[in-house]
Length: 198
Image (cartoon, rainbow, N blue to C red; front, top):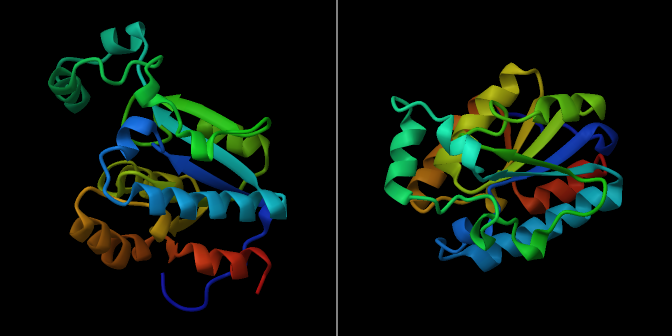
């Protein structure tokens, strides 16, 4: 989306950190800088009275059994084994951005944030109409979640510098060429001005 960026009403806004998990972040070279920007964004949203939410991918025994053999997720799980077990430290949300009381926390078993969670219902109960998305990875959770969120009638912002992909060129292509067609792509520095209406 081009043009002037709209102000963000924190009372109807949720910052969603997606796949900000210890194991996933450990595969990134720029994880520390990413976490620092995420901490800044969380502070801005909390300080303005907005909602913070977390989406993590993790499987319990029944979840593994429920993945159809023809599913792309089945092939992924066959390749990585049980590295996504829900009780492993690697699937925990990173301690630097750990949830607080009152935050939304959902566990998913597919790439996108909505299809295997009650995230939409939780957001609607809180009268959330605007989402600020930050995720790891850009070509995974963000690419799946942005169009889904738009189709669910949320106004969507992508926090580009608090998101990352193992392939920086893919991250750049998606945030510069694809996401702007459906969402406002911003930085954490821009967020500060938008959240105050400035």
